[in-house]
Amino acid sequence: MTTLAGTPPKPKLMSIDEFMAMPDSVGFELVEGVLTERKLMGALADHVAGRIVVRLGAYVEHNRLGHVFLSETTYRCFGHPNTGRRPDLSFVRSGRLPGERIPEGYVDIPADLAVEVVSPSDLAYEIEEKVKLYLDHGIGEVWVVYPNTRTVHVHRRGQPSLTFGNSETLTGRGPLEGFSSPVADIFPSPTAAEQA
Image 1 (cartoon, rainbow, N blue to C red):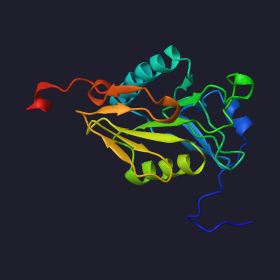
Image 2 (image 1 turned 45 degrees about the horizontal axis):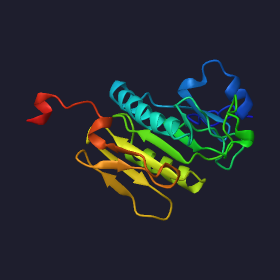
Image 3 (image 1 turned 90 degrees about the horizontal axis):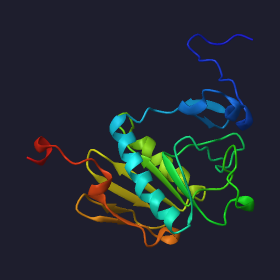
Image 4 (image 1 turned 45 degrees about the vertical axis):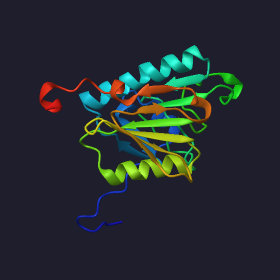
């Protein structure tokens, strides 16, 4: 069989199990069997994600609410058996994991919360697509965190999105009701030049 000049070859498809067995899969996701490179977060986005993990993780642990996962956790709940996506961080409330055991491989249920921290390399339409994908497949809430504007956009299916600015307090809903954090606390302190 011949291919037209300039036509890219079809990508090799792989199963979710093959993907999970890859020793260097950290920088990738699997989309309908196609290995897809994840964009690097960058230092600022990674730092902000860490600050959220500390605050959210401490609250969840103290109140025994469930489990907080980092960006290497793969979710396979997107309608295709060979799709595995990785939010920057996520939360699954107690009682939802089968046998209340954390799986060694991927998580087969949608998270209660997914958090994406936006980097300069992220495109607006890609973020919108990811939020829609998450909500359409049962993830209860999505926080999109913008370090450069120091805002957090909260999305829930069928509800208007909420925006929390730097002077406001981010509050949890549903299984995270009671969680709160000043938005300013999840970002590094602004420099003198930024404050001017």
